[in-house]
Length: 114
Length: 109
Image 1 (tube, rainbow over the protein chains, first blue to last red):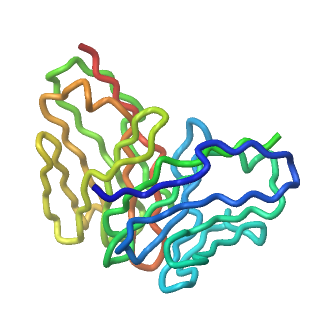
Image 2 (spheres, rainbow over the protein chains, first blue to last red; image 1 turned 90 degrees about the vertical axis):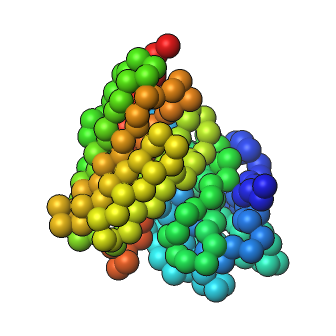
Image 3 (cartoon, rainbow over the protein chains, first blue to last red; image 1 turned 180 degrees about the vertical axis):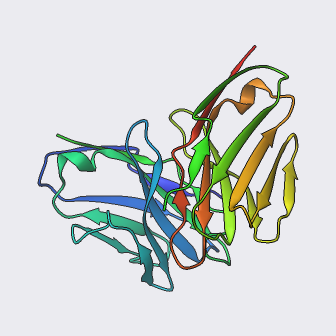
């Protein structure tokens, strides 16, 4: 069964460092998303991506964040200068032919900023 | 605007029923339900589109009342595997999907 994969599973970084979180969406999906979940809290939308561009982004997704689909299979989230409050679980998701249709979530990357 | 879920937490014995509600102050096009087990990613349960339809998935079903901007998730004859946090996500086509804070469901044997 196809699934979304994410690497690494856990990333520890120092405040101010850049991190890149990687996702491989399901191969025939067209819509891609990043979400964040701070421990014990709700899932928060960060950004949606379609046709090689951002289609929607939240207030959380400021200039420190960027997304890329560099090679047609990977989908990356970059945080340029991490802050302590960026510590969270980051989930990538993808959906098929319609935006916000059934979204398949990856297992997540736990980001710890020290 | 974030949908409001109620109750915040439920404790049931195996075999009992539960209802989880999700309401929004904005007109909705669709409501999405997900279940997340501790330490895992959310897993899709179902989408309900505008039109008041009801959907079922084994012993889990949901309804969507677009006039009241509400959705309810029904869990019947609950099983231990139903334990987790249930999130509703609402979408009105003009904005991104927004998730509620979640309802924690704990099933006791």
